[in-house]
Image 1: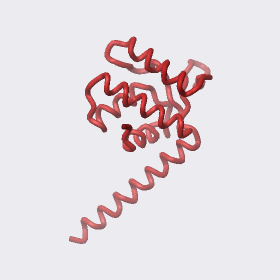
Image 2: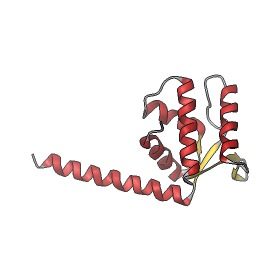
Image 3: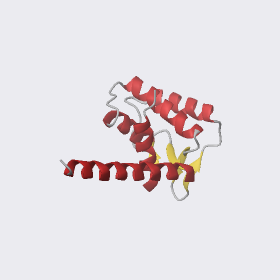
Image 4: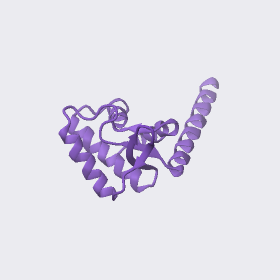
Length: 132
């Protein structure tokens, strides 16, 4: 059960730079409050499934002097690879482990919509608060 908040945070992070898998783990820890490593992995995989199928991100590697290189495999194969490699790590991924994510133009557009909506909510909340 992937939270829209987690997906939104992931896409917003991807506006500025490539996102490494441990960033997604951090979002699940801090935004969703999940602390169990197995649950974090399952939720990370569910989130990846959502954003990959929606066409919001590409999954791949970052190679020195080359940049982002997408994996040439199906979503199912990519998720299987992430699961397999995650399970081999003690304590889950850290910086640069397993994979990187790159927002697609569609993912950037979605992230911009989220930011615009958040700005709108903040403006209306502060306006409402001042009316007391």
